[in-house]
Length: 191
Image 1: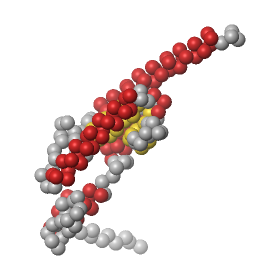
Image 2 (image 1 turned 30 degrees about the vertical axis):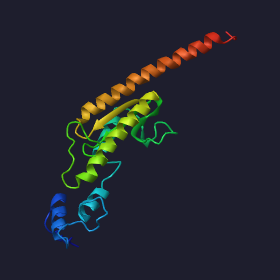
Image 3 (image 1 turned 135 degrees about the vertical axis):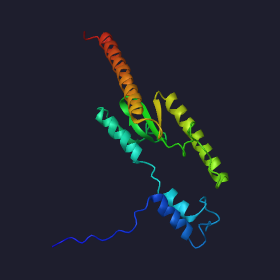
Image 4 (image 1 turned 60 degrees about the vertical axis):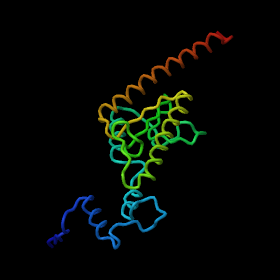
C-alpha cells in the first residue's frame, strides 16, 4: 500500500497566520470586549497562550545546567512560608534563579512599553519590575543568592554564572557544617 501525501497548504509562519486572522476578523481586529486588557481578540488569545514556565529558553537553560551535573527544583518556593516561586531552586545552597523575559520584566537593556494599550501595559510592567525587586530583597534578607537570567543572555555565560554561584556557596555551606561539627565535638563531654 502506498502512502498518500496530502498537500498541507501554504507553509506560513506563526506571525503570518496571526496577521491573516487579525485582518480577517469581522471587525478588522478591533477590540470586541471594551473591558478587556487586550487590544483585540487575537492579541488576547496570543497573550493567554504564553507559557509561564517550561518555555523553550528555560528548558535550554535547565538542560545545560543538568549537563553540568547540577540538580535543582523547578518552579519551587525557596522559602516554604513565603509566596515566592523561583524558576530554579538550589535549596541546599540557597540559590534561587529567575528566568526573565525582556518584555514582561522590564529588561534594563530592551524594555519598551508598547504604544498600543500603553495605559494597561505601563503600570503592569512597572509593577512586575517592582515585585521582582521586592522578591530579590526578601530572599537576600533570608540568606539566599538571587540570580536573574534574561532571555537575551548567552546560555553559556548564564550557565557559568549559575554553576559558579552554586559551587561557591556549596563550599561555604560545607565549611559551615564542618565548623559546627567541630564545635559540637569539642563541647561534647564524651571525648
